Image 1 (cartoon, rainbow, N blue to C red):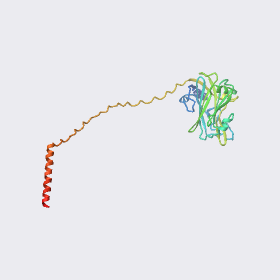
Image 2: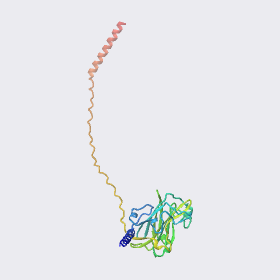
Image 3: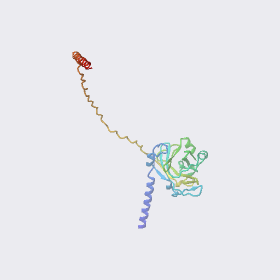
Image 4: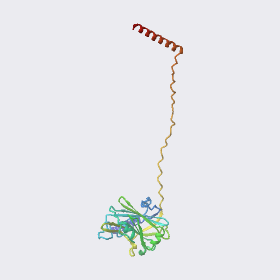
Length: 287
């Protein structure tokens, strides 16, 4: 009886775990494709590169130089609208190396570079041969790909951009899906990151092929995510202006001394002349 209860408990936990993982649908929202993470991505479905089935933590699946060990990491976030599937990938990598624009821009499939590859399957979800691979490289920002619908996706306006960050880089995709999208539709996808160095390239993550369609991550297109309202500026304090009080000080009266009377001045001059004459006479007598 105890074994039966334990088995039921384990089954219940596994079922709850499966429900909780699939409970988050891909939200409907139109982001700006600029390599900067819109807040809506955090409210939608996402998965880590090592959370994919069959992907071993800290290991790539193919290396051109033999060593598949990696310290890097990545996470993909998803949004959608009536025309596009939007994908934002955060790559954590502290050793980014440029493979050179000559190789990246002049090679049909320059996967041996610092690049993100998103693989999608949106027609027959059980037929992995109908995949579409879309890639973007960091240093040149070249967007390229291949697959059953890739040319149509490009003609409808698909694009991608990559942008360096403090601890790696971001890659953002707008993938136009032929026929448009609507809520409830499902899309299968995988994430691959190519890590380039002087030794070669280590491919990390997962691809889609004709034999693994049942191992892929499933996106379910869900409800609209409310747009983020811009923060309202704080009101400026109202400062009441007090009119300046001007106090006028009356000017001091100018006091003009009265002019001397003419008669007094004349008398004074006469006295001075007489004294001078008298003094001159006395002086002559003494001499």
